[in-house]
Length: 250
Image (cartoon, rainbow, N blue to C red; front, top):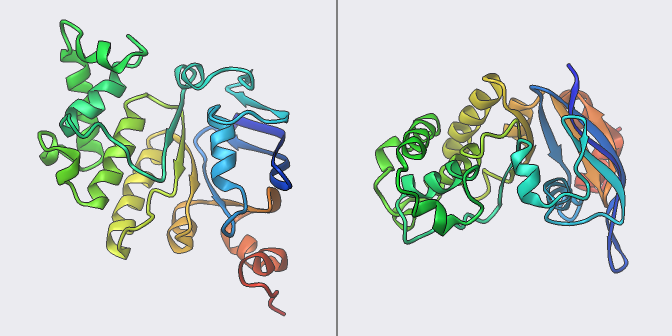
C-alpha cells in the first residue's frame, strides 16, 4: 500500500515546551493507525498540524503525495482530509440532519449560511441522511443536538466529518467520556468505516479499544515517536511502559 499521508520532520514549540519534535511518520492508504501516548505527548497537536489548524516551525505534511504544508485547512479538506474534535460543537439551532447537510455542501460554498440558503438542497439532504444511517443516527435526524446524549453527539461529530468525503480521517479522542459499551459500539462504527476504505488516524486514551481496532500503533512522548509497530509489540516496549507508568517491566 502506498502512503496516503506523510509527515516529515514536524517541529513545533510552545515556549519551552516541544509539542512536535522533528516528528516523521507515514500512513498507508486504507490503514487505521492508533496514535497514542501519555497526557501532554503532543497527539492533538500533531492532528492540528496535519489539518492546518497549527503551522509548524519546520517540516512537511503531504496528502496524496501533494505538499499541503502551506495550505489552509479548507484546501486540505478539499484534498480529502477530515477531522473530528475532542469537544463537540454542532450548530445547536439546527437539527442533526441540517448539521450534516452543511458539511455535505462544503464543495459548493465555504460559507455555512450560504450553504443553507441554496435554492435546492436535495442532494445534500440525501447525502446527510445516508451518512446518519452509517453512524447510527438515522432515528435522530430531526432532533436538536442539545437533546442528544454524549454518545450520540460524538456520532454527530463523526457524521459531519464524513460529510466532507474524506480519504484520510483524523479522529481526536472520539471515545472520551463514553461508557465501555458506548466506546465499543463507536469503535465498531469506526472499524466499519475503515473496512470500507477510509484511512484513519485515531488519537484515543482508551487503550483497550485502540488495540482492538488498530493493527499499528505509533506512540508519542514529549513530541517524539518512541515506538511504532503492531500493538502487542509496542505495548511491551520498555520505553512505552516507562512513558505510561513511570517504570519499565523486566
